[in-house]
Length: 124
Image 1 (cartoon, rainbow, N blue to C red):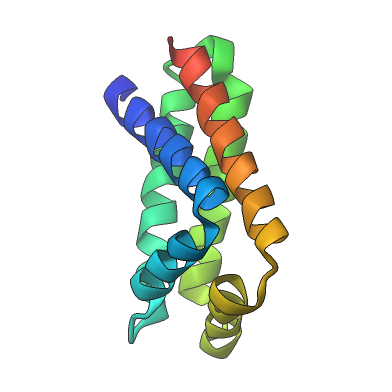
Image 2 (image 1 turned 45 degrees about the vertical axis):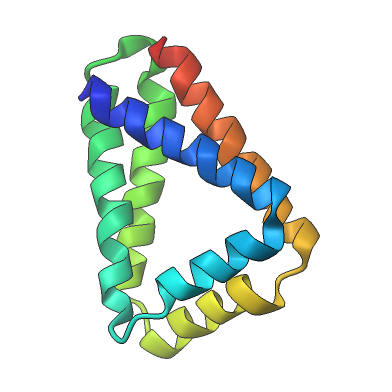
């Protein structure tokens, strides 16, 4: 479980830094990754991360609430991607990849970077 939480936190740090440093290319990459025929498939990754964090929260008492809350939020996101209306999900992806301002994308990059650093600091 420790290794999985390390991997997730490093991925968040890397993706957050990429979104902040090279926003245009990061959005192009995400646009290519999110262009799938069945948008329900996109719900798998948040559910996996959510399970890792919820289960991992019980292994690390000093970061229980951080990991638990992040895990529950990821699970809710995954459930939304599985059960939400397909047109609404596609519209949200299109907004994120094409219409959102660069400042908005960078803000989310900073949030991802900060959360990754927080989880990594608790693990270390």
